[in-house]
Amino acid sequence: MTITGEIRSSKRRSGPPRLKITSLEVLCGILVLALLFQSRLVDLLDVPKLRTAATVFVAICVQAMPFLVLGVLISGAIAAFVPASALRRLLPTRTALAVPVAGVAGVALPGCECASVPVAKRLMQQGVAPAVALTFLLAAPAVNPIVLVSTAVAFNDTPMMVVARFVGSLLTAVVMGWLWVRFGKAEWIAERALARMQDHSGTSKWAVFAESARHDLVDAGGFLVLGGLFAAAFKTFVPVAWMQTLGGQLVLGVLVMAFLAVILALCSEADAFVAVAFSALPLLPRLVFLVVGPAVDVKLIALQAGAFGKSFAFRFAPATFVVAILCAVVTGVVLL
Amino acid sequence: MRRETQNILLVLLGGALLKISFSGLYLRYVQKGLLPLLIAAGTIMIGLALFAIIRDIRRGKAVSDDDHEHSHSSRSTWLMLLPVMAVFLISPPALGGDVVSSAADTNQTQRSRNLLGELPSGDVIPLSMTEFVTRTAWDESGTLDGRRVKLTGFLTRAEGDTFVARLAISCCAADARPLKVKLIGDVPSLPDEQWVELTGQVVPKSASEKNSWVPSFTVESSTSVAEPVEPYES
Image (cartoon, each protein chain N blue to C red):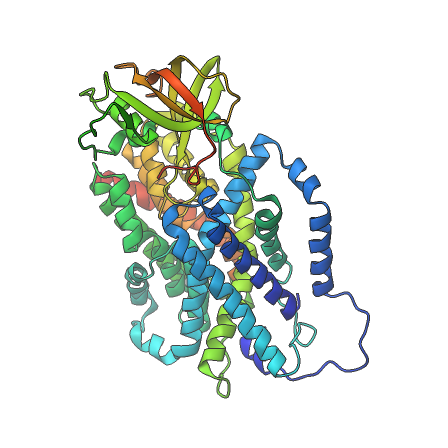
């Protein structure tokens, strides 16, 4: 489905009004039922664990929505105001060279991971090589100034952590970009993600902007909620109390922290405060937590599956997971 | 999913964001500083939907998905209804004792804070739980010993002991870190999760690595209070 198709399509529904059940009627039905059974619903959730899960779920959605909105606005602006040729001129022609440029460009997107998915998808649609867009996708949530400052505040007695996080995340993004150049296949990415924007002359640029943003928001919003559901469930029902026993075991600590980063799906602006709390662990596993989190977590996997298709997400996410752990460990050993 | 339905969902979701923003309920879920972003996000969501609705009306028809190929994500968009219903119908409460008892990192978070100034003078010093725990667990100089302080938090019990606890968040409730203080002396016999204001004194050197840096607090007087508007410390 293209935006322009949506805007321009001029076929009228014909014939007499039909009694057909569409999503609109379904929505009204659900809302009426939900209102009728409201007290039932509330009673059902009156178990401490479920209440906690519901609060965490709403919290993740509420916290992420502004950043998703920022992401779709940027994406809409790129669609409407940045011609593909301008992007091509901005980036080095050789993809292998453009990858690190995209990684550093991530500094300019002040948001968390929810913002970067719609932007990366739009970049691909505007003809930017997938490897370059993916590097941007991985770098932006981890290396922007807001995240670095919050990391510095959290780890105020170990400033090297900020440097290590920056280097580790940038390295992860660039390595993944190069791996995609070498091994990536375009057919893993769902066709809809790569479909070029059609020429949109005739519609005003503002209309293109608003329609693209609206379309991306509707597209990604559901997947964000899905990610929030998973994260809330994991956060509430996976016991983390045994974490403290990991103390001395470095290898296990690294693996467990990487795993936790994936299932907790914390916003990259907040994860440093959580990492600092794992004070029983040495710095290296906590660095792994900070590098893996913004690159791959359940919320992000859901968003990626929505934007680029399942067959992409199921290859890209595990690969990123491994690369992020390796990059974090290498950076940590050198810098910390 | 039809375009009209998508628009209605966007209006509902944006409305939910605005509702929790203006009613102050957002403080149950996220940190105070996010308020302008929440209002902006809610307004933009509604704006984008209204723009589409008005365009459709002006053209005298709605472009529906019947007219072109089905959107791949039409089913996932339905999920956007979940936070809407959660906010409008259930309105989940602020996190409480359940998180305190299941978390491993009680009071650990304060180790790297090093921002302590002078204590205010006065007979009873109101302190945030964060500052109290930081001063008792991480400050060797014992600045609180012999001082009378007032703490605000909710009660929680474990293994026969009563604690006063509070959660601190840095972004949203998903990253909540519990702070807790063990109560001795005139321990209030109120139910769990009841918010209280406690006046009393710290037991010097009671926080150690062995008890996960949970200090003990001798309660002299207590009053039950309503849950504060801002349930979390930041």
